[in-house]
Length: 214
Image 1 (spheres, rainbow, N blue to C red):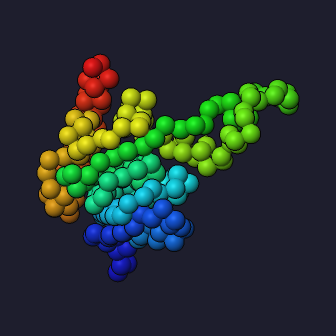
Image 2 (spheres, helix red, strand yellow):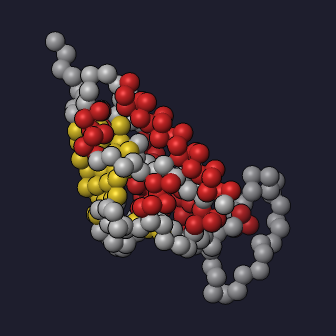
């Protein structure tokens, strides 16, 4: 009899540090996903910001997860930049009641990247003073903001603190405790989980539309 590879609940703690190297954490994330757990819970703790490159690598790893694996993310601390993206990757998200999200605007612009339609042209880039060199990492951060914009309007919210009440309005978090979600995930029928995810997505889109009209 073939042994089932799927497990019940797996946990990954990501400690945010301003000087942190997340190569090992991303590798551990990939190993956990390879085990095809029913639920993988990511707990984000600590102050600072996950580098944009690391956040994008976490997201890329999700492309190889089993369709049966659900991601639950919990923020025990306030989140910034790439840390916000990691939290948003969850199918189900919880956050400390008094925690906040924050992401700054990017200094990157499309003029900083060679266009695919350049065709070998040697047009000079726009003027920059000697103190404003292009930071390659800023391109990754701009991509992080593009993805965050799928959940929250970056143009309106960048540079401002975002509280739990706003996250609820956008349908990004639920009022139920995470234990209720996990009990649903472990039920015999996957239908309740799918309904929960679909309902959450619908509420998020309606809330986002209402907020943008204000």
